[in-house]
Image (cartoon, rainbow, N blue to C red):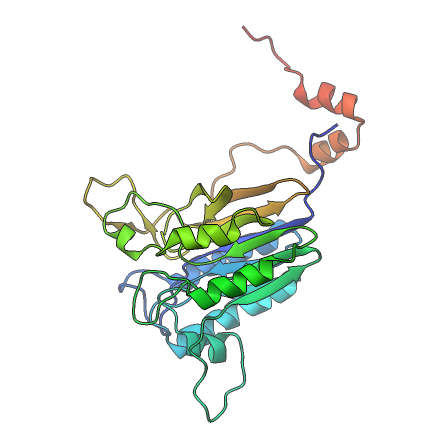
Length: 303
């Protein structure tokens, strides 16, 4: 029999879309809309039932109203068709006020929109997801205030039946890129003290513009690459170079005892090998021993 059961939850993790005003291109070259649309098409075409689409920050590049409205018009219908909830997370390029009014749809009043951190809690059955705002207005590095950490500690004091995931923009891990350490999450030990020993099962991050994984306070961290452009971490030392390739998204499969993060390249690629659907269904219908005999046994001699 398979060693693991089917996942209890599946989440699509995307990051750093960096939308700009209509008809404009990021840096005059990057079509942010096209790559995101392709990513959503892949997710929708997969037939996977997603609990949520989680965007871990830098939704826009300059915090422009048009950019928030346009990405909302692209993503919301796709999420609705997939039956997935949308989770937007603040990034250092975002505007708290405009995210609230233009993206989250909070009512506009005569009073200015709140500039407080955009921290929220989502539930998917017994799985809790906490969206933390690590942005610092006017700066690109990340911080969590003492008030945020107190709120987080209070929230985590009651364990969720299926555990907790945290989604934030600035991942609490080191990077080999030059200058980027200046822009990382500050005072990480305080954050570690709050989440260590709790029911947090994983941390989803962005910001770095390349996919990577690590551990923080004993908790797995998965960073989603940007959908707009990625950083070349193989460039010569001292180089900070963004390239128009390598865009990807992550699928988060939550099992009873494990969380699996898988990187999915965005784009159309040539099929070089394919098992017919009928054959896959035929093998899946067999018993465990027959499945192993039909699919695991070598069909040719080996040395």
